[in-house]
Image (tube, rainbow, N blue to C red; front, top):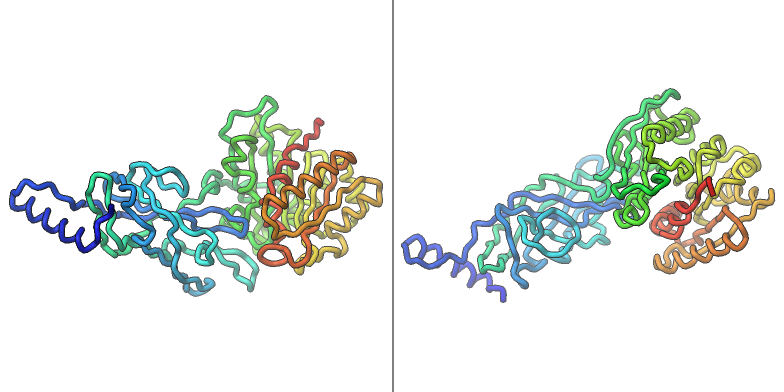
Length: 448
């Protein structure tokens, strides 16, 4: 049983006094103290969130079964610096355990770390914000905005007590789950733009034919020059890099970043940027002989979908399939449909999208109507984007089954009005959370 704090303090003081006087009694007090904190983030469907705090102590700890409670720690956030969207409040600690490494999930183990698991769905979990004057997403200065302290006594399995200090523990590091597994580089293209990019290399042994390659083109909100926002803004890249998915279906993931504010670079709808992306893909394949060139995939959302349509139309023979989300900008939908008859494409668009209109000229919808008009079979589906994931995946399986029955490789899904998570442009949230859609993409193969 845990000691009452007043009794703990009294016993600890008495034991220390006895020891100092040579009384021979063993101390129940511990010198253990937290040295520093590491924040652990995860890319949720809505964006980057802080999901745990790892407090490193000055010795190995093993907590008693009831040796620590969430109420023994205080975690608060306050971001109010100029240019940042204000965010302040308390983080809810949901569980406490010891561990040998600073990870967000795992079984309790002896170690120098005390892991505080946090409620990921609360508003104060956000690790980034949108500057609505530019619609660009920015990360908070997490080390500066978090305050963490141990406010209650902890009891270790050997009866020692780690006394509360109430002092704030300095945040020394931030780790990003999955994101930190990507390497960072910049590609100098012959087309002109220099493309910063991130790449994930699979760790599972390569299949006989090699690894597939997934190329992701982010939306406008994740633009910039940090070579990070294209991974943290949403799950377009991390869904394919997820550890569980990589264990069963390892793949390279290649994620360049655009910077529309830089005239030497530009946005994905810029032809020179599209050419640079193709150069990057071809260079990556050439420098990674274990890539299966028959299984190269393209996925883009919003601005990235605009660029993807143009890249696909000009380089249809490079890709085995595509998932395109809330896109448009297709100059000639009939020409695109003629060029992409043999390229499997699944498009997803919200019916009430206020940013890229669902039925605008050159939209995803208009392209798929052109496919159908040209005799290319299309599977049409629609569902509520707020349904539980399992239900949305069931509906996606129905669409795949219909595609298999009809021989279709072109699927269009409408997210019904008033059911898009967040706001009505974010149809990428239910898309990249849907394992059936991702599985369908990775099952496509140009070699049949």
